[in-house]
Image 1 (cartoon, rainbow, N blue to C red):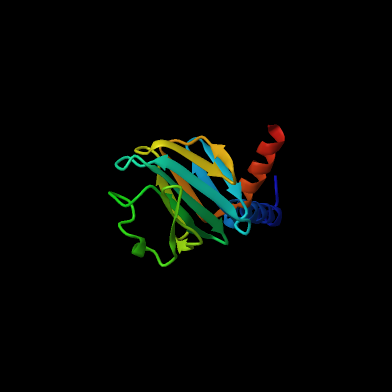
Image 2: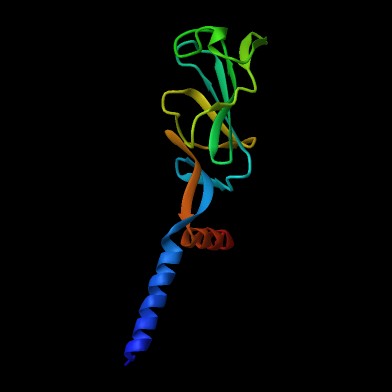
Amino acid sequence: MLGGNKLFLLLTTSTLMILLLTTPIIQVTKVKTGDGEIVTRPDVKTTITLEYVHSVELGRVVETYEIINCEIKLTRLTWPGHGAGLPSTPSDFTNPVVSEGGEYVVENMSLHLGDVLTLSMKHRINPRLLINGDEIETGDLVEIRACTSEPLAWLLWQGLGSLLR
C-alpha cells in the first residue's frame, strides 16, 4: 500500500497529466467536410474554392476564400450576372468589377468573414469544393474554423493516426 506522501504525489502527477493532455492549447485551422477533416497550422495560407451553378440564375458562381492567421477572407468572386441571390450592381463592391468571358469578376476583395464559416452544399447545383487546388468530397455542410484550440492529447492522437494509416 502506498504511503500518504506517495499517494499525494501520484494523484497530483496524474491530475497534472490529465490537465496537460486535455486542456486546449494548440491552435489549428480545421475544415470539416462531411466525414472528413483537413487540418493545417493557422499561419499557413489555405485556399478554398467553391464552384457551383446558381439555383435561380443557372450560371456558374466561383467563390474563393483564403484562410490565414485565424481569419477567413473572401478574396475573389465570379458570377454570371446580377440577379436573385447575387450582387445587384457592380457598385456593391469597393474593388473594380471586371467582365471576363461574359462573367463578372471581383478580385483582391479581402472581405473579412471572421474565424468560422459554414457553407451549405445542400441546395447548390453541382457544387465542387477545392482546398489548395485538390477537389474534396463534401457532405451537406462544410465547416471552416480558422482558429480552434485543441488539447495535446488530440495532437498525439493525430500523430498516432497518421502512423497507423
